[in-house]
Image (cartoon, rainbow, N blue to C red; front, side):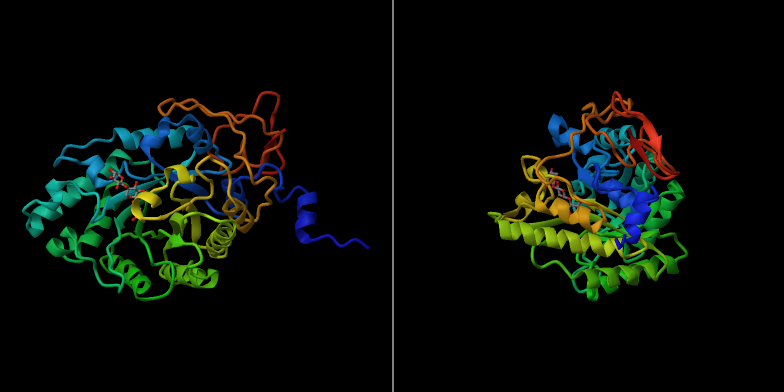
Length: 404
Ligand SMILES: O[C@@H]1[C@@H](O)[C@H](O[C@@H]2CO[C@@H](O[C@@H]3CO[C@@H](O)[C@H](O)[C@H]3O)[C@H](O)[C@H]2O)OC[C@H]1O
């Protein structure tokens, strides 16, 4: 007697998507109820046609985060003079592809222009400057962002407040002030506190939970905690610790997301390090998968070619799921498997041809994919309903579709 698994039966009945065919990271994430799998990007690399081709691959990336172009130094380099061109380029790319935009960030101690860091401030004048910045930036992107990282990295490692122009001049109230100002400018966008080393239990995670409680105590909206997850191969917190820490945030009534995932190693990379990296990506993604309130995962750029790691951590790199030649590493398979997908190839990027224009509003077209779950429609699908020449968008049920 042949025993079929529940998954096999559901697959046979057409109820579950068969992720073995052309599954990408976002396709797999969507199939298990996550809102997105996405990546950060940055304006300089958008001149790289092959890079943009994969960035536009919505099977892998259903969400984009601008790595730098929405930060304070980029958006308000001089007081009350706002520049949105670079941020808009990425926002339009995401919109053209039907990808969600995570917006990053409004208040941070880094990448501030000198008029902020060297200004002579009183509590009142800095609060006014803070509110003016947030109001202008959030209003500009109103309706375009799924979420804003409102406050980034307010904590020291021991969970106390980091010394910054914001904390020194305004005190902890700068945090609820920032969230309230963002909420007033765009009532519908999700508002996140975002930090690193808050992915596992300890003082800093407790500090992050206390920030959520602080904002709530002011009667101000806070929707999520962003777990940056800049990890090191072999030192990644266990899946169970990451999951229980996520649960400690969702217990406060907020969602969580992995917002800047990369897992770096001391170079040169070896097969053993790449295998361990795959395991580490898998356990981290697995923590989000098993946490109902974990809505999505963003990697901090998808290729080692443009990773921020080598320039920031001397001697380290190879942190992304694709190598510098855009070849998928074992980490890709580790992520896909954790998302419930089945890898069919590990050596090449998905053959998806797209427009490299970052300003065009035309839709992208997928080619060379005979059957591609979730690529052309279904409930909740916001991307283009376009199949490659010779294929037709065919619905197998309300949620999933294929170009057949
Ligand atoms: O010279 C600068 C260059 O240093 C700058 O690098 C960026 C620094 O920020 C990186 O993102 C952060 C990484 O982790 C968390 O701490 C933050 O939340 C992220 O914003 C980004 O990837 C780097 O490119 O870029 C601009 C250059 O002028």
